[in-house]
Image 1 (cartoon, rainbow, N blue to C red):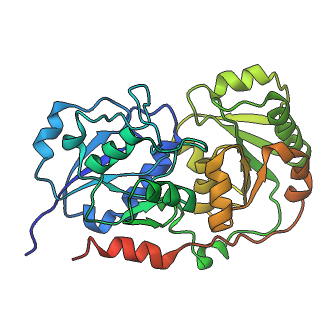
Image 2 (image 1 turned 90 degrees about the horizontal axis):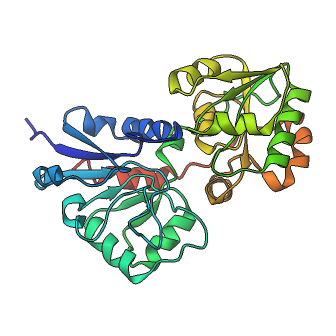
Length: 319
């Protein structure tokens, strides 16, 4: 009989203002399930201040940071993607990254952040990051134990899985907008294109202020039907014969998990880097005029998953 493991899961979905974090954590949990099923699990929010309670996890076997774009080059007390600092670092670590990504372009590492991550992140185990840009940034900080695996939400998008995704457009579509990255003109254009090309347009409210942003757009079209801001409602829509087109990256990846034809409207580094590394179907919001032709074209979904890297990362926990 093997000894039972004790594991901390740093969970970005707890206290999150973005339902995409639930998709991310679900993906990470599923990929770690063989290890987690027989282990004692403690889940800790990445968004909330670190509690002294973590001192009780000092002897735990693993501490996994379950994804999201919580790495950056200049950590400070106002950054709430991962609320850690040099004073609580010993309680948080040694942690292992699971498909974690870089916050945004142009955020180059400084001395404080390098020192903080050296205290928080394991030096003995490989870290899984979600794109080559994050891998490069981590190596700049002296982490050679980093593997580009992609986000765990994508690890199931194998060639066999993608063959089941239809090539031609569906009659209906589910879409998203992004409250924290607005472009009123182009986002209205996206909705206009969707209403012109689909019979029914479902809008999933993924972020806490997406609904307010939709009202701000003042886009009045009876084709648009709002989908409640929870994962169960979104999954129910994805059971229909729908495409996905939208600015929310992980809503699109969830659609791919459900074998739905997907076009990501790229608004930041996350989608752009995933397109470069894994052939995710994207169109830049700055080129929204290309969307009608893309919607009405036939295309295959051919995601390139780095299976060898994923297996290399996973194998270190099967000893």
